[in-house]
Image 1 (cartoon, rainbow, N blue to C red):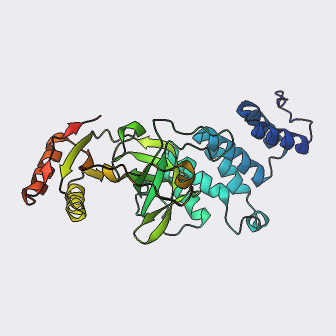
Image 2 (cartoon, one colour):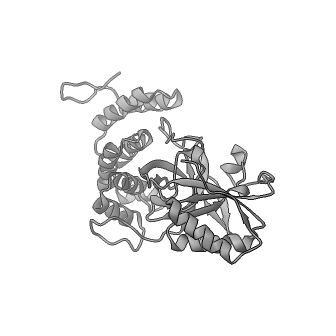
Image 3 (cartoon, one colour):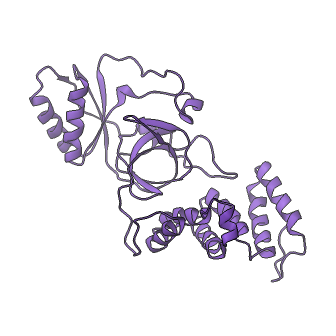
Length: 312
């Protein structure tokens, strides 16, 4: 049943509306869940938890403006008793930070991260561009994290390495496969709940799911093959490319994982496809890439470098 539209609140009990809302979640009825969220907010406008739950629905649907409004209200109503139920943290502040980042509302995002307890983010209106480290992010997630979630669908699912600029957005530093519909240098919005792990040196780091693409870099993606390249050769190429703002990845080392390993910690062997040549994924302008490859190969006579091929 929809909420009344004559300016009065519903005369149904909050318990009934809540039960129907959870049933709508179970049956994946997004339209009903949205109506029931509004009705419950009318019935219990003073409760932070209700605004938080409604904000989660808005987050799942990718309605960032509505999510920001609802989570801001949840933050404003948050009490010490509420904090006790969340180990002192305010989950609505986290989701407000995500929504504000999606909207480019950096003043609100900065306040939200501070309210959540993240140190070092100063007040202001400038975009957040800090070093939150490297993280693997799952593009086009294949499993929704929330009821009624609309996940990005630009192409195939792929986990890529990114440079996190804030707790909720990052720049792709790998060269994604074209099938992912993403490019080196794209800026993506990501969630904060770990969805598996990957190895970075001797550390296990959390995988985060993409929520949206904020910026398309537009950088072309290319492919080249090289024979007789060893790991130190490839490291030197990566350093040279990075110094020029170009992307390079060893695509021949990509592992196609089963879903369970991808969403956990890889538990059994997923070797890359066998190939005699090293397949390089590259990103940038053609002339810049050719100059970079020529300089790299000029001091390595053992290499045999195939033609640079444009992909998209």
